[in-house]
Length: 84
Image 1 (cartoon, rainbow, N blue to C red):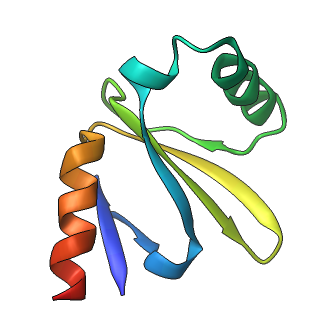
Image 2 (image 1 turned 60 degrees about the vertical axis):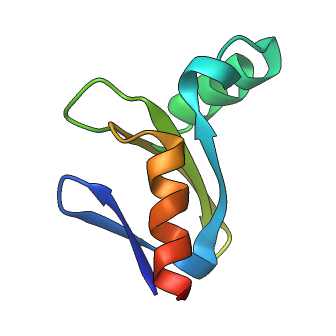
């Protein structure tokens, strides 16, 4: 199954490690450090609009941080609908 994260992008459900809200998680110094390291390593996939959340994936040994303009709660609801 796939999860649509907007802007014609979809992720394979089994590759998703976590879905995180940027407003809540970016207050943590560890999260900001993680995102900065991911960006410097070229692991961040940007979105065209103001990002509201990010999806961490791991596939074939590579980590990716996908920024998305959708809320984390919206993405979680989409995942639950896919399983029904």
